[in-house]
Image (cartoon, rainbow, N blue to C red; front, top):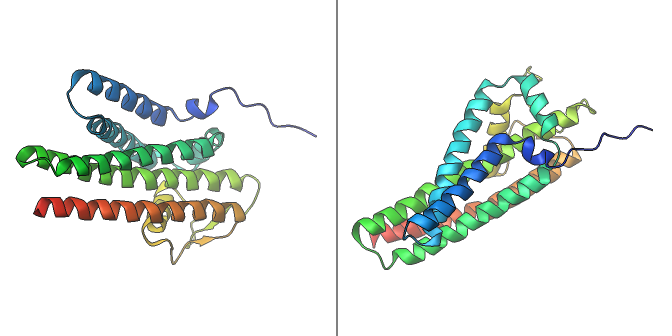
Length: 226
């Protein structure tokens, strides 16, 4: 019986160069801002996150737009290792951003004028970038899980409507963002146990995340009106 070849150390990091670069950029920016500015730690964290996450989303959008099905399959094979670790670390990063936003909103009550506007604007921008980042990450995860499963099963977990049997990244973005907002789709069927488990994790995470950002958005609106 053959055994799979051992994975090289740090394969999960090497197979995701743009995500790794964005994480490194965020860490470098955070250290630089702490050293060079008088801002609060939460402000430094949100600025670093927004810059790094925006860069990553721009690169991810470019890669998704340019990738054909063969490119998705190759990327799925390369990034299969460490996928749950990456997803867990992404969740921790998002949680840290939510805590930082809440901290800034509490600080906003003592601010006035331009300082308050900048504070609230930073919180609002972070909500947008974090929401896009979360569901884009899940879209990539769905795409790669689909094509990894396709190597061993003719029904790899999701059934898309229409005659096109080879969904691209846009199809998975559609599925992930609809699941993240409505927790259901009318036209894409989940047909495997592993995909149902991934989808369950996504919708549970999305419920708590959406509830949190809704509360934060209401708080920001109330602060603007107050």
